[in-house]
Image (cartoon, rainbow, N blue to C red; front, side, top):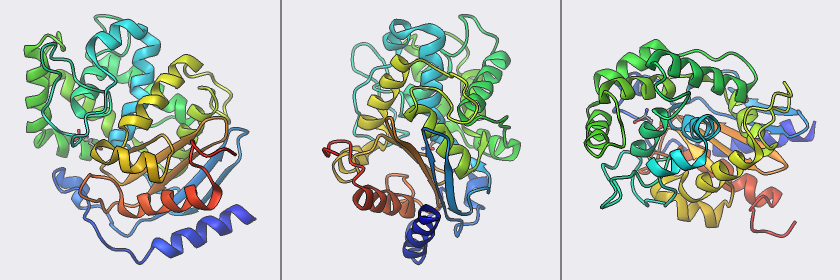
Amino acid sequence: PIIPDYLAEALGDVEPDASGEPAAYIPELAAADPERLAAAFATVDGRVYGAGDVDVPFTIQSISKPFVYALALADRGFDPVLARVGVEPSGEAFNEISLESGSGRPLNPMINAGAITVHSLVGPERCAPADRVERVIRGLSAFAGRQLTVDRQVYASEMATAHRNLAIAHMLRSHDMLTEDARTVVEGYTEQCSVLVTTRDLALMAATLANRGVNPLSGETVVSETVVRQVLSVMFSCGMYDAAGDWATQVGIPAKSGVAGGLIGTLPGRIGIATFSPRLDRHGNSVRGVSLFERFSSDMGLHVMDVP
Ligand code: GLN
């Protein structure tokens, strides 16, 4: 079993690094066990390898953003989504209160302003908010290949302190980027972020993107190849927020991080990778997760710009 041994060894090497802090602005996340550590690989032909706490659930948070962007593109088509959310890297923090000057369009779907708008674009037009949340959970579940659920405590905890996301949503509403009640959209977006996943689930979700939108285990086509290309391109340029440039050069894998400590990467046609470790760096990316990806990329030559 070469791969599980390799993964266990990699985890052992990063384990002593206790730098960074778990996210504190969501009180329930601050209470998470900071020692949790896991890594998993899922190949496009359906093999899944893992080491560490691969079956411990945590909230998906911003890792939901590329998948829900995929659902919006699939449900509404490209033009209506692109009219509301751009694809330009912002080089800013995930929760920056910034919109494109003039149009008022959020810069990209990976920062909160864009992701809140994208949430409102899932499902048919004039979708009832509860049906939209259901469509989001069903869609995320299809990517993972099993039924996922929402962590109600994390949801309530984030909503109780969601002042900044509410401010962003009200600003979007003032520019007509949102056409409905701002609070209702933030509630739906926060439920989306509170979906529970394991590191294994995330590896399979990433592998579904690697496998042209088809879940390698269930065989279900979740979204089209065209949608996947759009999503991976945006992950590559914007997935790591204000660290996206460092990441693109040093790791070179389309990726997305979440404030609960999850991190995914997708190698088109090859594998999905996921890691979990709650302590975050100043960009809000998992410290030990970033180290693990740097190592995987160099050990296995995974940088997408390298000639295989
Ligand atoms: N729910 C979190 C927020 O909106 C997600 C942020 C993240 O994971 N970077 O603040």
